[in-house]
Structures are given as structure tokens and as C-alpha cells.
Amino acid sequence: MSVLSLLITILSSSLTGTLLGSYISWKHAEIKDKCSLAIEMHKEFYSKELRSARQDADIALRKYPLWNLERIYNEAPKSEIEGVLLLLNFYKRLWILIKLNKIPPKLAYELFGDLYIWWFDVHLNKRLPLGVWTSYDALLSMRIFFKKKFSNCESYKRYIKNAKRDKKSIYP
Image (cartoon, rainbow, N blue to C red; front, side, top):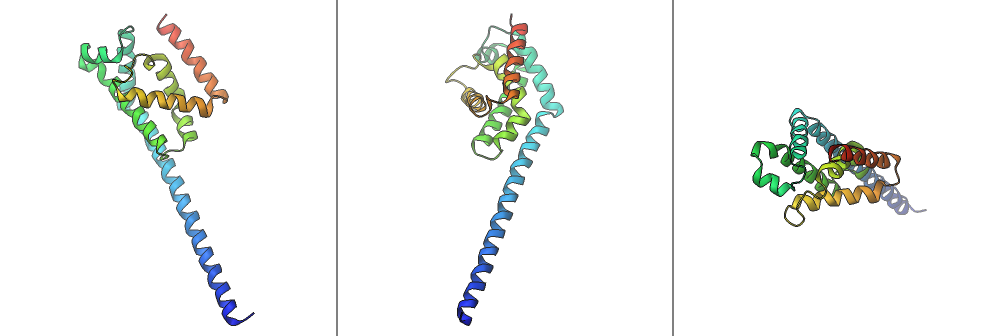
């Protein structure tokens, strides 16, 4: 082997190692960023503001069981709809982040799936006016996505069972 061949082999090995190391480092940072974003969303979801918003939304939606959200928005006092709007906005943002691959789907499901499925199945599905509120498209898309990806999981089956049970007790 000539000195030139040896030098080329060493340089190409070094370059390959550098590129591979850079790629691994970049992927690690990307995964860390995605997980951090999911954790930040989880902190927001359990913040005092959103816990209160979920309670207010639950009260408002139970108060008007036969009204769709457009009617509640137009006819109920604005203070009663505020919690619903905050919750819808949160779930819409969550779906956009999942769809854009900014949050790992499995992590999103583990962090938010139980309550998301509960809210959608118990209170929101069929109450969001189709084609009027873009939130409905986002929420329905996330519901379909969770079903496609996780319907074989025992947790998914438990979430559905809990939502059906609660819906029957809330809206007999």
C-alpha cells in the first residue's frame, strides 16, 4: 500500500467518523428537543390555568347537554365558554405538533391519550360543528390517529371503556 493510499484511507475514515458522530449527536438533540416539548405541553396541561379550564369546560358542557359548541359559544355567557376554548386550543396545538413530528406520537399518547379520548368521546364528539370550527378537524384527526396507532393497546381499550361508562352517567 502506498503512502498516498494510506493517507486517503485515514482521511476518509476520519471524515466518516466525524460525519457519523455529528449525525448521532444531531439525532440525539432532536429526540431530546421533541421529548422536552412534550414534557412542556404536559406541564401546561396540568397547570393551574388548564386544570381550572377543564373544570369550567366540564361544568359548561354538562349544563348545556343538547347544545353543540357553536350554540354554546353564541348563546351562553362568555365566562362559561372560556374553559372550552382553552381546552380546544390546547388539543389543536397538540395535534399540530404530533402531525409535524415535533412530539413523538407514542409519548403524546402516553401523556395525553387517556384524558384526550375521554374529552373527545364524552363531551366533544358530535358537539363540534363539522366544517365550521377548524378545531373539529384537528380533534377528529387526532382521535383517528390515536385509534389507528394504539387501538391494540390495553390502555386504549381501557380509555374507551372509561369514556363510554362516564358518558352514560353524564348524559343518560
